[in-house]
Length: 191
Image 1 (cartoon, one colour):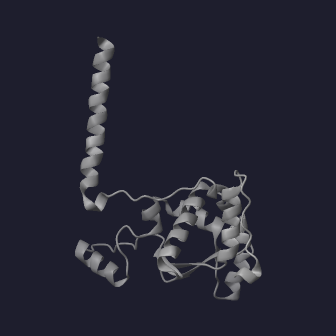
Image 2: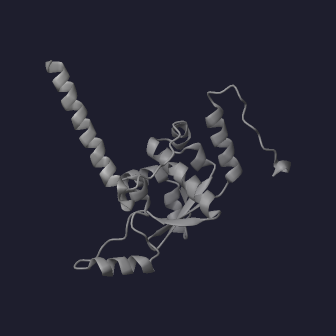
Image 3: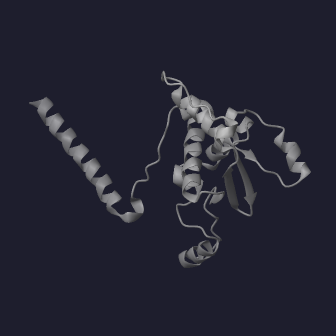
């Protein structure tokens, strides 16, 4: 009898939990974002966060069909700035709330920096910055083959897949690694 009562209480608590989540997600602002996660991308990206970021860079490149920009973090709010002033300023900067990488992926700034460092190289404007580029810690094949680049202008970060065929080859090998299927090799004259 006691076990049944515990079970009923547990089921009621679970129902309350899921009702709370359902009520919260009914609000359009709180709709869940589905982000695909390919565990095999971890091997080629170097970490789980880098794999998630790689997938989102692929997603946004597919949508935009060119280099695209995205904020790393939401722009800072000025002291004593009202909600309307902040929203108006963000509209001028082409920023929508929730549209930065850290908001989209739920990353901290430190996690984002570590992830982008694994999969992309930074395009530098001057020679001083190019010297910094040589002091890299860990290199993944994606970064080594210079498949993805990013550059910063003002507070915006621009991303571009520089070498799509090489990136496709790297991904294809990773995805086929546990299969008996051999990856398709693209010959130069098939491009």
